[in-house]
Image (cartoon, rainbow, N blue to C red; front, side):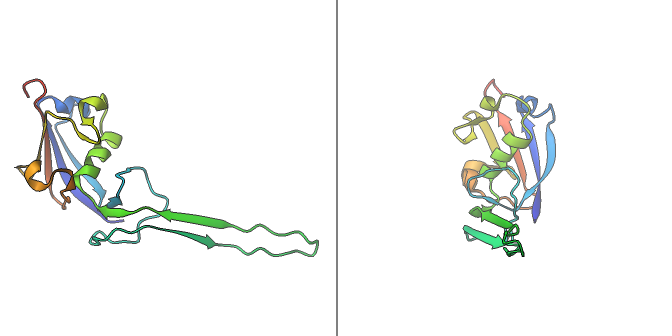
Length: 155
């Protein structure tokens, strides 16, 4: 599975929610589920990070054969079902969910609201306001720097 490395920084007191650390370097998957779920998948996506098309499928593979023994009983058949989720290139929306699930140490309500960062948190992507970059839809690239600054208490 391909990953990208990004730098995260926190300010304005937001670092208190992230183990009191102002800066992190994280490696995240280059291709992620469309639903932004951050749990580990049982099967890696067959689509490379450069793929821009989304896809989904469900397949069933039989790994054994059912045979009848001399006593008339059937032997075990192993069946594995693999369900692949729709995927997309990693974006800031996924990053926010990843941070919530893997980095946030307390009080999720101070960081997220309605699936995105709550109002009062400035987000900068490579020193540019994320609103100018497409907000959560911005596709992250290797080496990007994302800064989160709380203005909730005068940040």
